[in-house]
Length: 429
Image 1 (cartoon, rainbow, N blue to C red):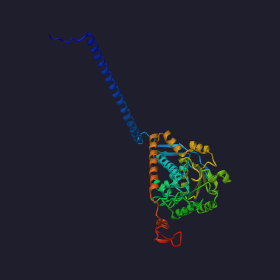
Image 2: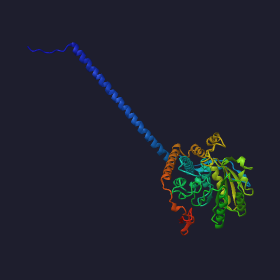
Image 3: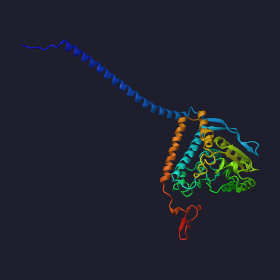
């Protein structure tokens, strides 16, 4: 007899329940996998979209430079105080987009370069005298915007900014600060003695550059080349007797020279009110016409310099400019800068009159640039400074044999006595 197994009704019910539960579990698992995949695809899409939008923003910023940006704008600028002049510079200044971007980049480069110099000095990589220019960037950039590179310029020891605007590179300036062979003066000048074509330093003796500038202006007049010389000094040097002697000679001979007093309010640690019986430095020339200018506004400085340059080139003789500016650092790196002024004073100037912020706000509010575009400039400037600092710390120092070279230009080599009578060095041009 053959036996057959017959499923129990209870077994059939249980199998059916398990089958349906499995189907539900499979359906739930499938739905979960589908949801997870969808979420993952959404995340990937967002990431790609973010990168694309950043690239698009960059592309839009670059494409907008040809279409959507304002190519030129006119701004009201502060009225200039006049001495012995019936009329002065205009009360408005026109700025093109290209000029604005150029000024912004140059001022940012000076600012970042000086901050890096501060860092390297505190690390004892830069030694000796070091006078920083941050805060006064509008002076150097504005002056350069009002003259040409064929004109001549001489200044005191706060010279890093002018070395850059006159054609030096960040790399050369930083290497000079660290005393390396690749420096702009071959590592032998340091912070106070940098030179480029038509730029005569960088002078360490207070006020001594002013009569030298008159000599350059005399050469310009003698040669009849329609060039001029800008001779800069600070409020701390303004009481030097040699400056008044130079005023006199320059006026007698009608030399094409612009005397510029960069009044940053403090001569070393002494305020102008404590050092000068008269703080109206633009009137110090007496018989020489003068201008008092907002030195924190690059456009104001540029327009005043153009006016002064036209005055000189027309044969009227010298003119005097006082640029009212402010330095954020102390007089030099040995001066903390807060023993004779408060931190609040410095911060107030930064917040209300910073030259870079002023230009940036003008350009953004008049659609002459985008925030992204200016950020790209900032990033590029930081990279340039970091690369220059790397070079300045790795480039070799000049050998001792180069110590006496470049005393004369285009001269035959000659022997120079060293520190002792039996030490001989050779000087080559």
